[in-house]
View 1 (cartoon, rainbow, N blue to C red):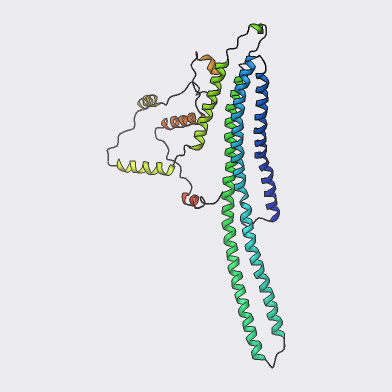
View 2: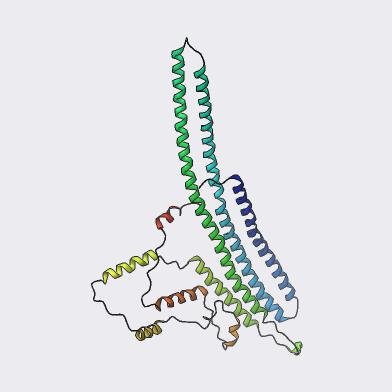
Length: 351
């Protein structure tokens, strides 16, 4: 791999500059959303409509939560962009070594030119002095060539090293961008589903007399917002402490377990009916919301006042994977992970 040309680095800088505007607009969106929510809440508080006042107050809470998520997204997104921008430092380091090598090549050419010019000159009376001077010049030329060879080796090594670092930083940066968008999208689904359910609590009157209407949705809207906060809290805990499984440790534990039981008499595998009965006993708990990846809040109306917190999609996925693992009589061994030693080598790179 050769170092990137100047035009390529210009394209990289332009692309990162355009992409960095997304985090700035996200911060602006957060600011405008707060201002708009506060103004709408102020408007409803000056009216006698209790339903609009209650729903808008709860909606403003939801807007505040979404504003915080936008700020978190902007910070994570900007951090990932800065990680990719470090590639510019790699190219500058390569250019410095190339510049040093260029000076040595120029010195070599000048020295060769001086030697040829001095060799053609006539100095019969001082022949010994001429030979001595030529020997010194050839010695200097040899030193320049040795320095050039060292510089060429240094350039080759640093280009290879910086290409590896470039791929690492590009991967970490783009992965961070994807994760930031994904987390924001998951939160947005929960937040705006909650807002939709809040709006549904505004009475839709067709023939009734509005003067005789009694609004009783304040308790329901409170439950909906609390449910959203709990859902976002669980999602944040999943982000901060991801359930990462070390496949290598699992394989080592499995191997040690097999070695400890290799001398024990082996028992035949259970029959199919027996195995199915054991699965039914060990089947994990399934919530009433398990049929939906993102449960809505509309189910709260049909539970006779009992509110059930919807199952977290991450927990649900874990249960499904566990059930799939248990349904296999002879599960497959975990796949071989990539070289951990190579991964740890670049883990200390600045991001």
